[in-house]
Length: 222
Length: 387
Image 1: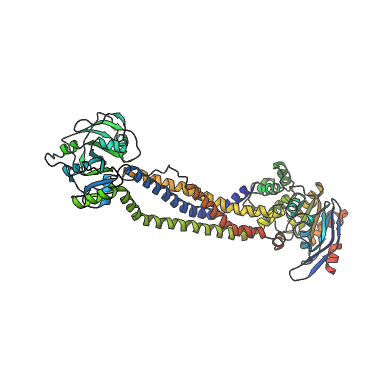
Image 2: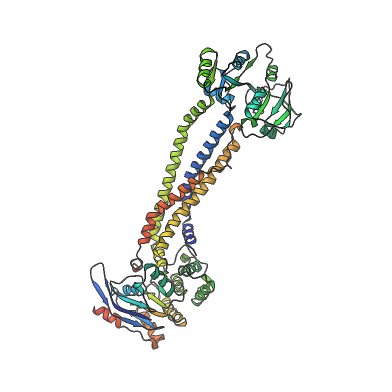
């Protein structure tokens, strides 16, 4: 479902990171581990079509992301890739519901209020759908952020340190939700984290999906 | 959700900034619209009322005052001239037509004008009801007079001495309304017309018959130079040309109008700067909003359009509000205006006002351009890496 090959990226300070090749099968759930500064976010952004690598390619669902034109890449990202960030970054001038509508409208798809209700209910946020982001707690906002990433039924769901600003209870819930929802709609899930709570949560609840740490191991070496 | 809705939601999210920018733009446009429409109307009225009158002859004094009192019925007359002297002009071969006017009385603020039927032909007046005067103390009234005072043919009214007060009423002789004029949209609507004889009889001027002024029409273009020079040099009267005097009047008030116009333009430019600063500053807070929209599939172009749209929606709304404001102000001024002769009308729109809307739109575009370019260049990955 997702393959990378020979990805490299040069940073402002001149160092070049070589990312090991990576193959992710459809529906698999992975943890992307590594210390801060090891290039997790960089790699995740390259997978999500947000950051053009210096060389190498990313194949998502059989599409070579960086062979697409800028406009096509934007559209592909909107349609097939959902991204959850460390901070939810909801749009403050819009209600929860409108934030999700916005995600739908950028893909060029028609409005689907039922899908919005479904996703919000799945995250237990249906009752907040008319609230504005400043009225939400941090945990609630993060759940809306997840709902937004999921609303277009992305084939690939990326989460970048989704728990780092949450307390234990919320972190646990967020990881469980990500995993459950990705599983229930057949999305491939990649969570980048250096949070031990995530590792524990994953290990305890999804033993069968034992996460692969090769990437981070190799990243640390490089 | 389209780009317009997104822009509007974001504008609404900062109501104070929105209100400030709208106010600035609205005031600038409002003043400009008011000047444009108001001055246009005043110029129109002046031109329309002076139509057909090439020269006004009256007692010596200020030529502008003579024009104002005899054509627009605004200022006080310069004095009287003897009827005999005035009549001598009629015989002049350069004069095609001469209409005498005798002013000095009013009825409820409407001027009573003693004249002959020449005035009706000159102004193209037609009756809506009744007939023209035939005897002394019979009057024909303008449409506005009839409406304001609820008069109909057969009614009796008392004139009073002076041009505006209702003291000093001529109680000995009532005037009888015999006719009401059709609406003309000029000063004639606000006049009470009667014969010269009525005025003389009212004031008991048995031997010394005087008029206030004569309205003249030239027979040829040659008279334009010769006649005024002749009158001013060789008679006790003065001649004043309406075209020249109203041009002078406009030149006089033009300085003030220009000052206000520059002020309004400065206000609009200021509004542009304010819109620019607001958009530019809001980018700092919204950089994540924009990056997140990009993540959700919005193209650079869409983000660029969104910011441009925000600027133009803001200034266009402001311009529309300003035009309504300007017209309401004009209408209010017309409503409470003292002199009914030049009443302003706020319900009249000029095609030139379209330029105000276009100017508003352009100010919005220019103000939003730099913020839009900055938003266009925003790098998603870099922004989202900053937590």
